[in-house]
Structures are given as structure tokens and as C-alpha cells.
Figure 1: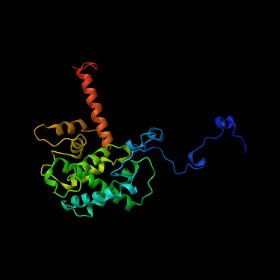
Figure 2: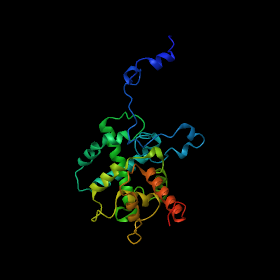
Figure 3: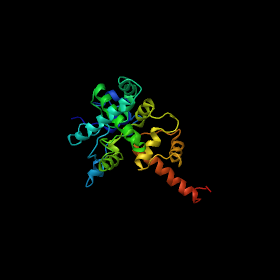
Figure 4: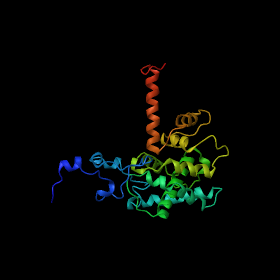
Length: 252
């Protein structure tokens, strides 16, 4: 095999992507990419922290045989979501399709699903999370046979797995489904962001405390990727606020 000389690399013709074998389909990382697989070196000795064992959300663990039992509950929540909706059943797949490219590009890994398969996966998981959020703060949306909230141990298991980086779904589609379903008469009061914060912090909606209002203000104008990003941003802002209160950053 001929050796590649340094002189040729330095002085030869400029290479472009098409000159390099195996790079035809490579592109730069899209700005919307935000859901990653955890590095193997971080998994060593503590894999269960990074892997869902009860419920799969999104692409990375979809189809896992161990999690198929929970998928039945996901679809029950999809049914609940559609039954209370004012839109037709056909409208929701179209909503996902409109954001399909953005949703696909949010994942680091290549997606081999067809468009229909991908849309179905996203719709089932997004409706499940939306119902989970709403039912957490508003009991009137539950019934005695609710497959999640009638079993406290299952609630804890599911909530703990919404923190897993590999178990995320873009908040943009949750926003769309929540707004379209029109759960509340006054739609300006709550958003998917404030409900997500309340759920992930094991808190309930309280009109008097206005805590949800503070969350709305915190994330106003900010890009929100997914649950992990939501919690990270909130904790970071809390830390900055505490430092400023102590006067370390020139604040009073």
C-alpha cells in the first residue's frame, strides 16, 4: 500500500467530503440534537442509573422486551388523551408529522424507523407524558382504575425514570399536544413547562403559591429541550440566585 506523504497532505489539492470514502452521508451535528446515549465508560459499574427498567420514552429504548408491559399503560393513557380531546383522532399524527424532522434530529443516533413507525412511537409516548403531567396535579382527570395513579409504587417508578437522559422526548411536541387538547378553560395559566416542573419535583399545583408562575417566568424566552434540560436549567438558576444574594456576583 502506498504511503501517504506529509507533503501531499500539506501541498496537495484540497479534499472535500466526497473524496473521503464512507463520508458521503455525514453531516455536521444539527443544533436541535439534545438526546444522547450515555458513554460506556460512565456506565461501568452503575449501568442501572442510566437505563430505564419500567418505562421507555422515545427512541433509544423503544422495543425493549422488558418494558413492553408498561407500553400497554402508555396506550391506555393515549386513549384517555384522545377521548377528552376536541380534535379528531387523525389530527394528532399530523401534528407529529409536522415536527418529525426536528424530532428525529434531536437524537444522536440514526433512526431506522419509517415515518409512520416514528410518528406512532412519538404520539404514544407524548400523550402518555402529557396525561401523566395533568393527572399528577389534577385528580379530576383520574379515575379509580387509573393504571398509574391507583398504584403509588408505580408512580414513583415511572417518575424516577423521567430523569434518565436516554429516556427523553423533545418538549416541543409535548407543548403542541398539551395546547391542542385544551385541558383547562383558562389556557394562559398553565403550560407543559410548569406542569413538568411540578411533577418532577413531586409537587402539586397550588393557585395560591403561584410557584408555577415563577417557573413560567424563568423559562420565558428560553429554549427548552427535554426534562433533564428543564431540571438542569432550574437548578443552575437557583444556584446563581443564591450566589447573587450573598453578594459574590455583585448582586444585593
